[in-house]
Image 1 (cartoon, rainbow, N blue to C red):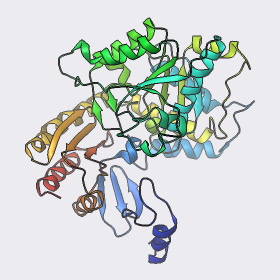
Image 2: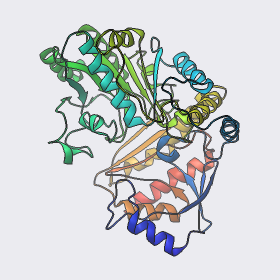
Image 3: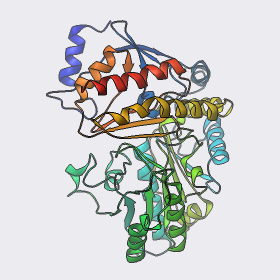
Length: 426
């Protein structure tokens, strides 16, 4: 049991994400986690609707991943990746090149989603330097989110996002309006016109277009038309601009496809992976690119790619990722995600009739309620916990991304609790 003294130390000295250190949001002490449940220190069990920020797709305390980690611990927990390689990394990179969109057969392992974006941006810049062209800007779409490090922040939404505070210090990038066409709405070509115009006007300066395919995550949980992504791919090819797909949140089945790019049947020049890569066990990310991009980078000065994280290719993390991917591919994950999607559509739709709700969006194992006004996070989360669920709202959004192993009654508790709490105007 965590003592009151320890909890007081946590409150006064430990800075949790996206909260004040002086007046922090409440923290709920977790004792253990099993399956889809988080057990609090006071004995309450909560159905987890967040997959721990979308990473724990198999739930918690997974025997197959536990066994993989135990086995790897008897060999080595970590070795530097400079001048050394090992079987877990080789197996992981082979798996990734086999399952990602065609042509992505060069893999750079790193240690977090934000870092994978930094790597992708640096790859694009170094690619053009090797071609004797100085292209220094990136084009993206508003409402995007790509991480909290400096390069990643520069391609996040500059006004409505969480990084507007740093706007005067970040590299200035180009931003097109976010796609307006929904996932299954009729396509209108004028949706792509602003991005097309920016590419036309800045074609000599744009190193790459970067976006989250199909689903924009923490920047607004927006879901857009696959045709938009197809048109972006076509325009990048036409203007000879690289395309970076940030699949950190959408990869490994979350949208109903193994990777969201598959909804549009396109392959990017660079792809970022993270979050669910290890099943939520350890921090690990990967940036994949094509033979052409890799060889071009290495053809110029200094002849190498200038990046090397200390924990790059960590054997424990690679072993967890191998076990997680094997579990996913050997399971009937498509049906599980489709069943979650159908239940989310059915049980979240009544929220649309509430006066406090502006929109309801669902795709794969993603359910989003957009409210008319920002929610009181602390008060709403307390109500959720009191009802036996773990849901972490932000801004105007109340959303869930549950583990794929969730059962219908457990998912029903999440959806009905959301409706009940919103209905009561909390």
